[in-house]
Image (cartoon, rainbow, N blue to C red; front, side, top):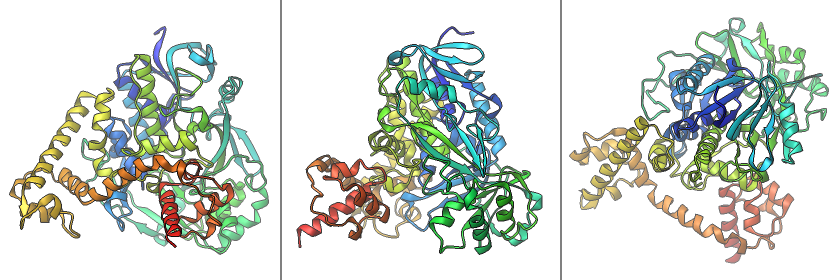
Amino acid sequence: MIKEWDVIVVGGGHAGIEAALAATRIGCRVVLISAKISRIGEMSCNPAIGGIAKGTIVREIDALDGSMARSADATTLHFRMLNRRKGPAVWGPRVQSDAAEYARIQQLYIGNKGIDVIEDEVTGLDGVTEMVTGVRCRKIGTIRGKTVVLAAGTFLRGRLFRGDELWKGGRIGDISADSLERDLAERMFHVERFKTGTPARIVRSTVNTAELEVQQSEGTDFTFSFDERRPSTKEEVCYITYTDKNTMNIAKDFLHLSPLMAGRIEGTGPRYCPSYEDKVVKFPDRERHKIFVEPMGYCSRDFYLNGLSTSLPREAQISMVRSLPGFRRAEISDYGYAVEYSYFDFSEIDDTLRLRRTENVFAAGQICGTSGYEEAAGLGLIAGANAGRFAKNLELLKLSRMNSYIGVMIDDIVSKGADEPYRMFSSRAENRLHLRQDNADRRLYKSGDRFGILSQEKRELLHSSLKEADTIGNILDSETVDGTRISKWCRRPGISVEDVVARSHSLIDRDKRVLASVLLDEKYRGYIERNLRRHESSRNLENISLRRIGSYMEIDEICWEAREVLERDRPDTMARAEKIPGIRPTDLHGLLIYLGRQGST
């Protein structure tokens, strides 16, 4: 056995996998420690990858040579491009994956890259906090390493809740990393508590799908990976059903047994993915809620009820499920539950994902306060890359929020933290017209190449795409339509790729995917340049006073959630408002518009 690894990765979830692979691409000797090797890469909740903003993160992960995109493509059962009613800048590719097959392929990536895997429980860091020398494991003792990546997910003092039931675990069937959390607390790291949850799984054969609304796959050749390897040919149908007044009344009858409502759960849950009982309390006038019925795998035994997350008792769950159209005879294979866990306060993490009071410990995934597979994987890739680069005494990678969603996420987390599990939204990015899923390869090629996290194959592929884009850009700038450069002419409303190709024979044989992406760059060019100028000017926010604002609740230019937060905290300046969790760039822009109007009246 190796006496000392370059990088020790603690945890085999989505963050841990990308961390281990990224460090390996840099040329490091890596060991991944998981409490259960068989559960590495498991989709603990919904077996889906992507979505609005999240799909762009997956493409950015692929542009940095991560594995999530390729695994999602290989296991796709159902595809949809979300947000098509809006502009291409905020389209969100999403696939339903075969959960078991996805985990199997991720495990193959780990094995094929020569990463050592140890099944054990990490009970603490080893050595002084400022420069640790490795980790301590329950069974095999101390493992030495130059750097450590903590990617423990929801396992730090994880507690599972269902009605009156309470037991230890990071997820059903797994341990709770109590000893590791205790060691971190003794080292004076500041941790907080969050909560998340999952719905019941239903035996598919007991569901009458004829009563459900069918949601067919869009059946496109889209791939998350820029390698454009053919996606899975297996296909599944997803369905939609709805809760009704009866479902709501059942939940109300059991609210007194809800661990959340009873206050036994202290951690804050995700506002945009609440439990069903939370919906009942917060939206009492809304009886009907949409429930997405999604298969756990190809011809799998179980359905996943997306939208019916709950920690109510078993008897409440079976009654609620059977109140749904098509589910009158449904059987539950696994009951839903809530999980409460610890995460690092944002003040502990810097913009390289290194813990501030150490030289060589990095954090990734849900212990950074995020929620979701995609967010975890993006953080894991950056944490692993930086752990590897630290081990080799190289400059650490920092992504700009103006050039990637991963950069936005990291900047938000380390600068102002989150008062609920952080989920990526396109509205969090002031430069979202540039941060599109179609151009992630071109946006991040230089960072990936400069910091050594691209394989030779990926480097050649992305460099080829960049060269193709440059060639297309030169054609658009040099050729004209009716005396107007094509690069300017194509910005007109309604001009399509086909229209541009029809006006330029030089573009007929060019890569249509790259051409479409370059045309979007041109269409949005004015907005993108304005956003960059606005970003530069935002550095003067400290000089903009908010003291003369009477009531934020009357400012129509900002969203309702921002009004409530600003009214509560009453920041003195725009700079302080920017640092408040829940305040987005669009809200800051709205405040500037409001102040400008007030100044002109």
